[in-house]
Figure (cartoon, rainbow, N blue to C red):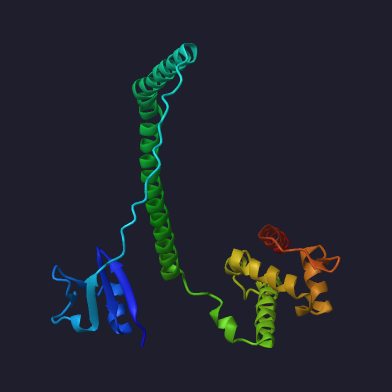
Length: 266
């Protein structure tokens, strides 16, 4: 256990244990007017752990040296120059403040700040309008696409999706042979009095029938045998194929063929 001595305010305080000394040094306990050590919080005192007695040490008063400040030396020219410079700087400073407050600030406010805020507000308004227009346009496109999908007709070639390639070729061959049969019958059966020329001619010159015949032979010339191809060429008065490619039959040729046969029959 340590003994601690503290001299303060003309008194000598002797602490006989570390706990009491630490309480005093940490500020948790202090001496009252009766020199009784009391805790700052809670009740009770701990004076029995501290010895208080007058401090018998002589008080040493340290003398402070007397410093005499000398007044600044007076220089008329230097002081006059300093005063003039101070006045000039003060005047320039006030002129600058007046110029900034009365001239520059109104200019900046009217020419820069207010137009800037106005332009910012306009840009924000235009940006908002542009976003609304884009959303409206996108919505119109979506509605148009939806309407097209709803109104889109079913594919006419849906049946072909379930047909094999051989079945498609067989159907094309039958269509071509039927057309060729009508073309041959235009003269043969008519001469025999069996065929109605006008009805056959109407079928042969039908745009859909001609298109179907030309398209079938263009995509697959092998639908016709060489003999049959030569017969049709002879009947038309020209080659049905040139350079391995079909020369499409036209309705005008059929009409001319029917007219020539009619004249021969007469």
